[in-house]
Length: 335
Ligand code: P6P
Image 1: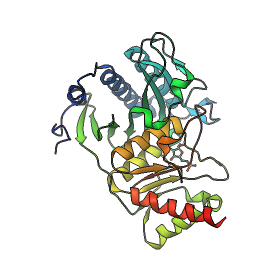
Image 2: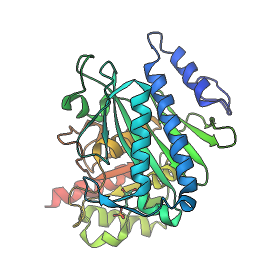
Image 3: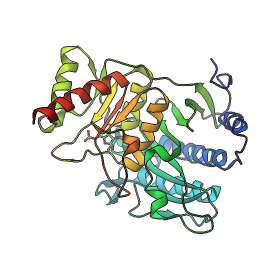
Image 4: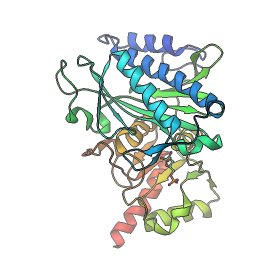
């Protein structure tokens, strides 16, 4: 199989990035270098995760992040590794990280790019050996080069992303990303230390029969979501919920399905963060032919006002997202 460029499965990530760059006559290579920097950090974090059980870097770090969530040791390690790789790479002026209260200025004042990142999502699953992931969005800065990135640079809508991707540290480690021309997946070969093109030109099925949601919160779901969950049961869909966003999203992307994190009593605005979870996965799923909304609005058109703001997320196969939106719309019309 080949991707849109005709590059064969087995092409290295580096060669793929170079060929993609050739397609952009005015590309000067900075975005390509940024992607390489992310891949480098992913390799390092992958090694730390694989050794976690042996090096006693599992478990809680003993502090909480800005979200008030207990940081895991690997959360902190991953955050340090990605910030270091982006700082040393030189292309990124400012970073928004789930693990940091405010923005991180890298000192690369000539850097053209902003990165919003969840260095290690689902980290509570680390100790029980469940797949976890890194999620990232890339934006061009709006401010002039020569100074630190601004808050306006960081609070851009998802439609302004120039790149987005995730790393899934699972039965195999994969990097899946888009720069706005389709979605491609690369599988990591630890023996060679390389990512190889394994899933060229990923297209997600228009519909599916897998639904992912934490039904433990069913009683506090909006009525429209309750009705859709019951619709899934009546149609004998499969309930698949790993509790790790990247793992649930990746399976649904390849097989067809929908992941939902609606407003709940515990998380009235949903649990997932717009800047470094929802926007990135929304860009990917749209590039793969799917859909991502907050139940009524396109995720990528939401205008961010805070770095760590949360939003409800309905993401996956277009026809499945449309269906839950029908139930939610009917709920609104009834009230
Ligand atoms: P709940 C992990 O903490 C995470 O951010 C996502 O990876 C995951 O899908 C979700 O939260 C799980 O949340 O409330 O169902 O445990």
